[in-house]
Image 1 (cartoon, helix red, strand yellow):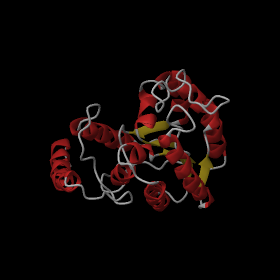
Image 2 (cartoon, helix red, strand yellow; image 1 turned 135 degrees about the vertical axis):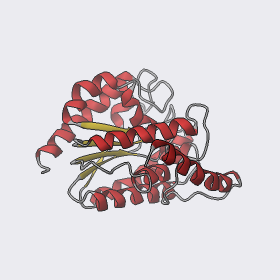
Image 3 (tube, helix red, strand yellow; image 1 turned 30 degrees about the horizontal axis):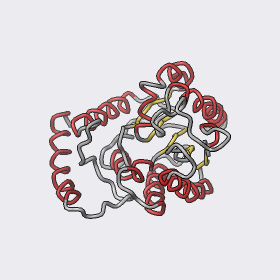
Image 4 (cartoon, helix red, strand yellow; image 1 turned 90 degrees about the vertical axis):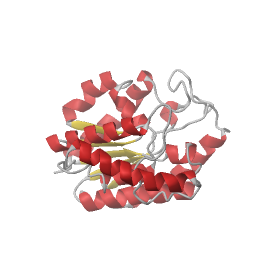
Length: 250
């Protein structure tokens, strides 16, 4: 399928979905749905471009470690690029994060979107759900359903792979922030998925907070996305886990 035909097909699908979303119908967190909303920082054309680039990368193969998620994952390509090149690229890592994605968007990318065709990662680093909370105002149970659906697809597609399921990173400046509290409640549900076969729970949380539980601006200036210091903290925590997992994964 050519890039033109793919984009035309995606546009046609988006029109129908957009009409439902604009009319206020509830979007299922566990049903594959391509991006249908224009954001000032990520229009639909850019989202399609990101997905097309992921298809190209998958077509090249040779991926042992796959990062899958939203803008927090995507920004390994910018704010975290130096540490990525130093510590993750040598592990044959690929970054399939796209800003603004929700669970249903990721689910679409790895099913109907075909983003996983051509690769067989041994380790998959998954963190998703913060946009369901921040953009869709989804309750924790709904976010968890979406994450569970993604895990089911990954387990079906890659039965021999290990998924490192991350806790959703803290957001909001203080422990009392309503968004922070929703993330905490969601993570309590996601933690249970660490009991699933080939899923390891990675509870990165306190490493980003100060002693009072506040989220320092020197690590996450917008109380959501890590800066370069934040990505170093992430790498320091997750790279040893990835390496250990690779060592015991065929």
